[in-house]
Length: 113
Image (cartoon, rainbow, N blue to C red; front, side):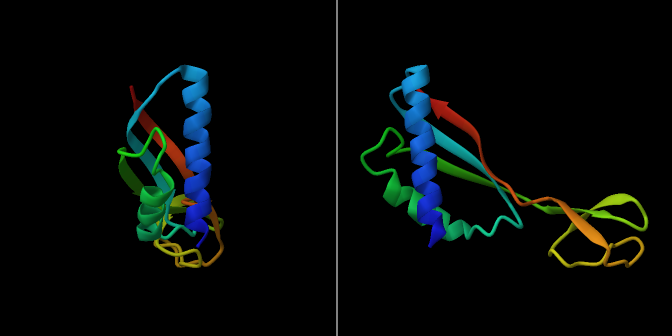
């Protein structure tokens, strides 16, 4: 389950930022998770609760914002929303699509004290 490792990385980032910015508690952690990131959201929620125990974010609320996949259609030169990596362009039906968005996992916002 790589979601546990992702949560460990989130905890490390929080601890580094707490040292740099001087906060002592995290109230809320907001994440952006792309449709093609390979992250299982429920596993991430579970891992977050486990990994944050004993940390500045132990009681933090986790908000997950899921972004849709985006692709660039080569034949019709349009950016389109796609549900799966190998979807056809909804405008011209071509499968010549390049994924341009939805592969991300990032910390959107931390609410700290």
